[in-house]
Structure formats: structure tokens, C-alpha cells
Image (cartoon, rainbow, N blue to C red):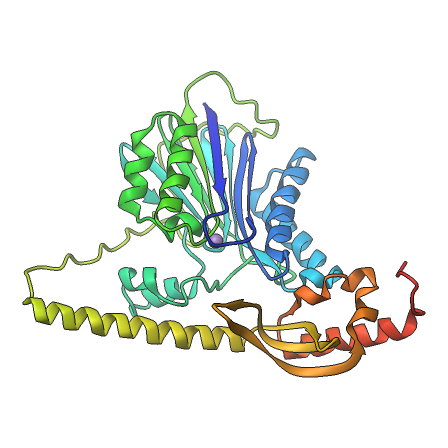
Length: 386
Ligand code: MN
């Protein structure tokens, strides 16, 4: 069995950077969705897939171990380079070994199997809203529009080690695997994904059509997909092939249990028709609720964000994010220091100070400011940093 692979990605309509990365390195495939201010997301997702590829080329073939190494590479980079401090990424990877597809997964990107026209989710989102759904606090439909749906409970590169979900699937010719970032699943639902995926036999066309559908549906996030078709055609050229003969389909399982991925509950279909005035009132109430939740959610989010930037020509600690929307600043100055910003910007490390150096919390922001103060005082003026 072999794989015919295709990938497509799009920055979308809203984001200024594409922070998604993908890897097509037969028989290893992956997608990653990076996060973190100041190019951190781009750096994290890139480094994660690069590390996978490099170690695989050096003979490592244990997928969970590869993800651990990618985690460490991203984490260590974030410690070394404070411009990308606090960055992280999702990572969903599959490796074809004989007749088996191995999976390693962290975050809210997803892997799907399409077999006999049925779409089956193979991964679990490591998100706050997924946990709320699992606890029965909100429905699947509510989760899809929840203001905190992007908050991850697990990501690669934010700690020294990470818990990696592992899985294994006995694949057969005709199977199609989809790897996608949340820019796809956040924009179009599973019925539409299934429809687009099954409409083209060519994986290249399917990948492009999926990304196009997500961008047309709003494209508020970067969207990336990898489509893998399993084909019966000669031996695979997997250099690490261990070659266990495929046993009857044991289905997908994770490290914790042998049970197949749970079926997703379908949201109930609304029935009957309400009177027009009643429907209008319901819609207005719903719209008001959405706005209130969005404003409160934004406030909570901004209050949890910190960065170091420039205020009145001085290095300053900000709460929020270094951006403005429709004339409203999404940040405020908490501390304006006496350290001149231009002295700091002369040092290579703080060259991009004006764009903001993100910190995980107030403590880290204080530490960055203290470090800048020290670095500025130890380097003689008008001399570039080594
Ligand atoms: Mn995303």
C-alpha cells in the first residue's frame, strides 16, 4: 500500500501571517497550527514539523517520541529567544507503517478518516470547550460558536514535556485521511467537509476545494489541509518499515483505551415554526447575548495578555495585545520605565521592541523589562550588540 498525498494552505481573509505549517514527507505527514505573538506561531509550527522530519530522516520512527522531541525543540527555542517566548503549536502527525497508520496528536488540529463515504473523527480536541462538552456543560453546537473555543488545554512547546495522544489504525486501499487545522473545522461543518472530500477522487483537487470552501465561508483563520489517499500499488518505500502483517481491522484506539473514537452527538434539529414576532425577539435576544459574551470574552482574554513595548519613547509593560481594532487600542500601559526605547532597539535582541515582546504573565513581563534595563546599561551606547 502507498499514499498519494496533497496539501493546501491559505492565510485566509483576516490574519496577517500564516502560522500553520504542514509536512508531506512520505510516509510521514503532519500539520501544525502555531500560536504566540510576534511571529512566535509561525516559528513554533515550522520548527515542530522540521524537527519531525529531521529526526525521522535520522532513523527515529516512534511517532510519540518524535512529538516529544518536537515539543522540546519548540520549548527550548522559546526559552532562548525572548522574541518568541511563550509560543506554542498544535501538532497532528501520521506515519504509514506497513498496513497501519500511526498517529500522534496534541492540540485542536484534527485527523479524519473517510471510508465508504463515512467521515470519522480520529482525534480529540485538546480544548476547553471540548472538555465542557465531555462534561455535558454545553452542547456540540454551542461549542462551535463558544467565545473560548480557541483556548487549548494542551499545546506543543509550552512546557518541558507534553502528553501526546497516540493512535493506530489498520488502513486499507480506498481509505482517505484528512489532516486539518481549526481554520477548516471552524469555518465549515463536518457534513460539508464530507461532501467536499468525497466530491473529488483527486486528492489535490479535494485539498484545494476544502481550503477554498473554508476561505469562502469567512476565512477568519489560516486554513491548512493534508489529504492522503491509500492506494494498493506495490511496496511502500518506508525506510523504517517494521512490517507487521496487518491484522483484521482493530479500529482506532488511543493510549488509554481500546475503544474506538466516540461518535459525536448530532445537534437536535429544530422543529415546527414559531410566530414571526416571536422569532424576531428570539433572534434579537440571541444577537445581544452573542455580543455580550464576545465583549466579556475579549475583556477576559486581553486582561490575561502581557507584552513589553514602547510608550513615549520608553520601554513599557503593556496589558493586552499590540493591536487596535476600529480605533480602539486592545492594550494599555501598566508600567512606563525610564529605559530609553531606542537604546534597547539598538541591541539585536530587542530590534522589534516596537512591535511588542509577548510575555506569559506580569512576572515574565517584569523579567523582560529588567533584562532590557540590564542589557542596555552593560552595552556602551552606539555600539551594536555582538
Ligand atoms: Mn488556527
